[in-house]
Amino acid sequence: METLNTSMIKKRNEEAPLDALRILLKTQHVELTPIVNQISALPIDDELEYYFIPMDYMKEYSPYYRPGQPYKNLKLINFNRPAISLSFFSKHKYSIVKNPPKDEVLLHLKNYRDELLNYSLFEQLSRSKQQELQRVDELYRSLRNNPGGYEACLSNYHHYYKYWYCACRYFEDATLTKTGTLSEHMLKHTGKAKGQINERLNIIFIDPKYITRPVPYDNKLVDRELANYPTRLKLGTMTLYIREG
Image 1 (cartoon, rainbow, N blue to C red):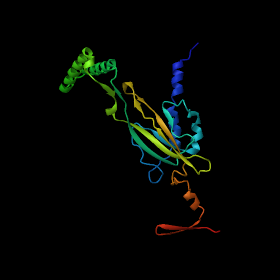
Image 2: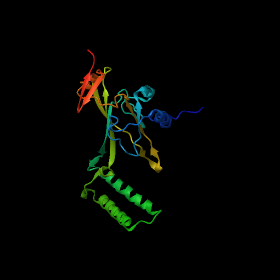
Image 3: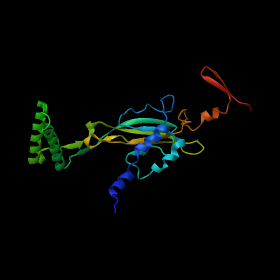
Image 4: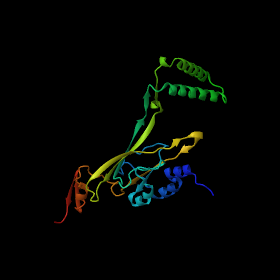
């Protein structure tokens, strides 16, 4: 009798079926444009995949809404909170570890040296690479023999990894009189061994009606108040709004 591979089941539970979802998303996705819509400049990043989906389709994605146990390759940015305005910004994400264990420093040096050596098996190293290999090898030996003679830190600061965020404004209640905001980081495609890519996508739900018009932040709902006046007479910068009493 065939036994189930529990590790494969766990991996399947952690990853959503992106290929099947893309077929659905591409039939529902709408384009948003700054100025025309209440949205900032769109993020331009080949590693970022995202879709704007009208709130009418939101229930179809409820099986993928798992608070506390989200999918690794799918993010519902604002489920149950369709956006009436959107903005995007990026942060330079990095970490720094001061005075890491000497074993970690030695391992980093060894792996760096081994990478150059492995490269030399297939192609001749340039003069600068040869000097680099010699320098790293000498540094590795010196630090191994005299670990107290060096200070070090580990950081990905110069990797310049951008972490994209989506900030959205939404109505908090059914009467559409109070708004709230949220900010969520977005998932990016990431590389893995042998040139393969871990694909990840983001779904952003929108309110098609209000994403096309400004909603006052002071909760005075001016636009809906003025909508009650059918006659409008514009003169210069002012408009007279009139209705029968």
